[in-house]
Length: 443
Length: 169
Ligand SMILES: Cc1cc2nc3c(=O)[nH]c(=O)nc-3n(C[C@H](O)[C@H](O)[C@H](O)COP(=O)(O)O)c2cc1C
Ligand code: SF4
Ligand code: FES
Image 1: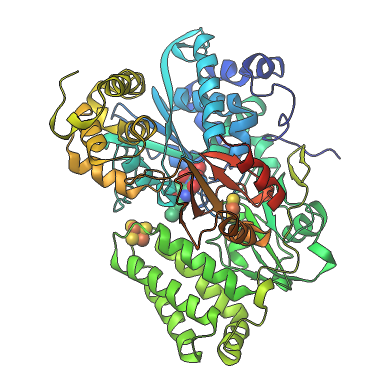
Image 2 (image 1 turned 90 degrees about the vertical axis):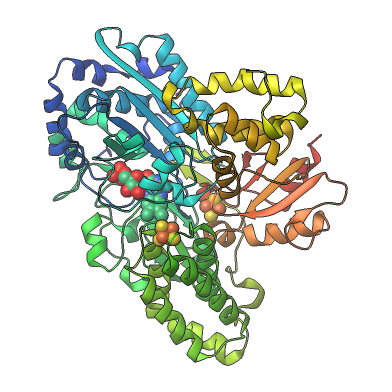
């Protein structure tokens, strides 16, 4: 049985980012089809598809779209291309290798929701990807696909622009993203109101992840039911899973949403490096609670991973083999959150700094068991007490690492040093051949 | 648009004119009454043209976008890619986040410090390089990764780093 590839099928084909090649492969036919449909019928297909947000929270996309107030105009679309969560590296390949697919998804979404201005908010570090998007937008505009008329057929003005960030993980959080797009520092907003009601410049705004929107043309072309059938229950379609860390073949794998995590690591990604034993897996980007080796025989579907005590989040799977030091890993994660906290709320600003400091001392062997207990208390007091989800995102790794690997933390305290010494990041640390969908990257 | 307000005076005139020309293209992307949205691109443009986002560059951007210098400063100091102080001719940023470190990013960070004779983040005395650690660059599958002058390099080894830095002007 051949696998259905929705997002990665064209990656790596010569000139895949070019308009003429996209069209030769059937591109913009879904937009053409959508032009002949009632807007509500397009939204209905997306609802039927069971598409859930690929940015992290897994929220039902069709449902989110219905939150727009009926009678307020203008409305805006912002596509979240901030992709900054450690372990997440998927949206970049869509933008690099199939930017017109994203653009077609944007055009259909805007048509369905009566939106005439869309922004792609892309992290500042993605220079190549921003250039690819800008080139695609220019081509689509010159060809009359977007602009005053859609596909040269319908009087429906649509402008799409790229807005580049400048290095701040927090701007991936949707309300911080809007602040940043308004030309301010990225301070998340108190919610409610949600962006669908009060968003960019105070107007209703839909925010979706790149991968989410890139699925829309396929859904319109093949029907929501066909997309739903690729998944299970309330999750449809395929997903781009990124596998990194201690595997033989790291990379991006497009698989059905409910694909088995163990199979993804052990078969697709070629298993654990050096034939060593698996120690731990972070299944959905650095914020997702860590799973121990024996807990990974699960479906990656959102609700299934939740039932296993973690999150499938952004689909970024980080693998640790038995030679890695979990204290070192957590200390580095804690530094990330301390660094990236916007500083707006006290529990997050102070808590992330404390956790970073305590973990640094534990790792260096300068702490005792009481410090480990205190670390847990601090994490517990951040969770649930902050304006945005970064607070929880910082607390969850700490809580889960301590729950599953506490003996390693206590060993650092007893020995007064890291038991792994120089190889705390694992015995093998060389780059490996990598893959991204059908593409191969030789080391 | 050529009257220079407040702190803008110290900036070379041709460069300010170039700034205005390029800014007007950037402003096409935002509704005319939402010019302030262009603060990040305006400051990045300023950094490219004037070397870094000095108070004068902040004042220039604020004035052109019809907003306060305080707003420009707030943005300039919030984002890591905006530099409010002069830095080296080449900016080298090595990812040491988790996935990269599992694939040698942390060692590479050590190698680069040794190579540039620096103890931690900083600039070489000749002003040629500024080195620092970066958080996840979105290249975790092709780790380890680094940015040099905002371009991404992946699957790095010390040999590749030597080649890349050696090829710089
Ligand atoms: C701290 C933080 C960082 C986030 N970073 C990203 C990101 O880089 N990309 C993304 O698509 N969503 C990110 N999100 C999730 C967004 O807030 C939002 O839920 C998402 O863009 C919605 O799109 P979706 O429904 O299509 O997933 C982040 C959330 C938080 C709390
Ligand atoms: S939780 Fe942290 S990142 Fe979020 S608003 Fe509060 S301080 Fe900022
Ligand atoms: S951890 Fe280095 S690029 Fe993601």
